Length: 284
Image (cartoon, rainbow, N blue to C red):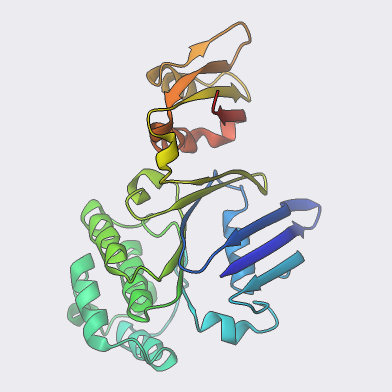
């Protein structure tokens, strides 16, 4: 599905991705996590053919920049920040159906209602005048109706209310098992029932690449070490909640966690990833 080798991307003097290599097989469901500025959105835009990186990349066997239209036929994408489109909800829906004939109006309308958006009541409104949550719900419905081979979403639940977030996760669960997913999120805990793999980026590099379901780790303990950039009380609190101890070195916590709890632990750390200088999780 996605094969990347040595991807790098710079904007001026700032290097956003650094020699990133990853292989995502067809149909795999992946959570892409990391703090702000880690490189998640840049990687997504490269996969969509919006940016040209150094290195080698194929998506469904094609170069997403050189053969962009062919690649995008197989991808459904929902951005973190919806574009300020002038067309109405009805016009956008018609355009989406024209570009992706596999989607039906009945499916779009059903999905919007499930997510909590009354399509009929808002069909004449310009898209840019909808609230952030309404925009997100409509784009999700339009995207899911296409039944893409690969679903790429950048912080898809960021603008959703709790009920909409729960309904959205339910809609993802209804997709065929063959549908691949790359879901960028700060809330990896809510994705655990959907995903098979977690990939974490930090400063443009992969710092964690782990399968979620690994029975071989059941009953095992992981040696854990968290080193802070500087003393930061919220992160200290999380470490103490997980029974990690502060030793001789300031800002360094260590201990053991259950291997089966590693994803919950990483989820707890994710909001403070910008304050983590080093993180180790190893089998003893």
